[in-house]
Amino acid sequence: MQIQFASLSDVQEFVGLATLQPYLVQVQDTERTVNAKSFMEMFTLDFSEPLSVIVSGEENEARFALAAKKFIV
Image (cartoon, rainbow, N blue to C red; front, side, top):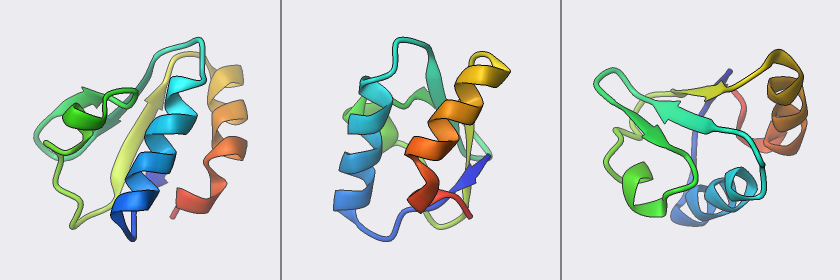
């Protein structure tokens, strides 16, 4: 799934959603993959382009997509 953020508060909200999940959620740009539950790691990414979200397990990915639907592009 591809996501994009419009503001700092979007990033904060996304990290909050990821933190609530009991499974691994990662976000990647063209150069690096980071833990989506870490606000500090998220800010090492390039937000100028859409980012990819990696969630462990198809069922978990579907659930997370529903929770994060406002960020999906």
